[in-house]
Length: 406
Image (cartoon, rainbow, N blue to C red; front, side, top):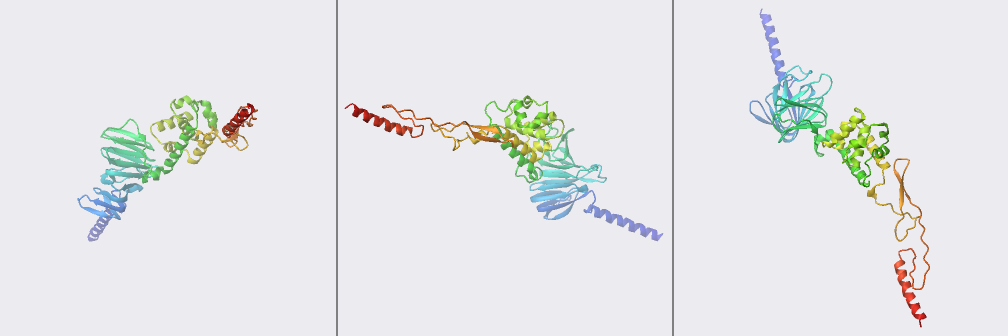
């Protein structure tokens, strides 16, 4: 009897120790691990605040504020929360989240600043539910940025995101965002993700797309500038500079809109012919509607799954098939082609085998023969010295005429 009682006491004590270990950060779903690179404050559920510049366990009821630097909160199922200077997050006890989480999980609430949520993908992976202001956010299979300012903003870099507020919900695909100024005021559809070139998180996920967009804008503006009035607005024009359009019988330049510049049309069509998500018509509609909504060209290309190098090469080849850039100025006369009256002869531009253009001089213009001189008449030499020579001839003619009259 005593032996059984002693065994029961030992087992019970072991269970208590195991439970305490789990709650202190030993892997249980109701705890998390904070790692700070800089300085942060942790306010526990009891109300006491502690400065943290390293690592410690977090539990439901704790609140983390980053004073400087960055911090990472690692939750169960390899989910992570990243904070930066000015970010403040409170942790509450939530229900099970996703098929891969059977225990109770912590649910973050963004109090101030920014929060980057990263959730691994894969079959059966757990999602993460967070709150920002009066909105509930579910993130799965990627990373999303939450911001609490004048409005609650949720932007998806590459995750599947759903935002719910006051009984309404909206899906936010990758490279889109939604702003909720007040409870229930969800927009009709997400808008393109707004990024900042100097933002560390934007650079991490969109750095290449940002740079690609800048290069495409430069090419677009340059191509538009090199065309004359009325050029670049026909179906045949784009079929000539983008040979891939020859395989798209349904292509009609009228579908691009009458006010679209030739450079914008070229870049958008180059992205559409390079993509493979849906039919060509669907790609054209998606490319231009996303860009017209405000998406930078780099985001449009990323949204279509188009690689950087082939896209830039295709745009450059198309520009090479177009007319000579007006930004280069009028072609100058070559040494073998003499000028007439101080003006350079015309030149012509013909396509080269490599897709560019080769500038060649126009018909050779021989210098005109000087007109025979008559008494008192000017002498035309066809050179810039004409005015000086003619003045001397006039003076000499006048003197000789005076002598003849004597």
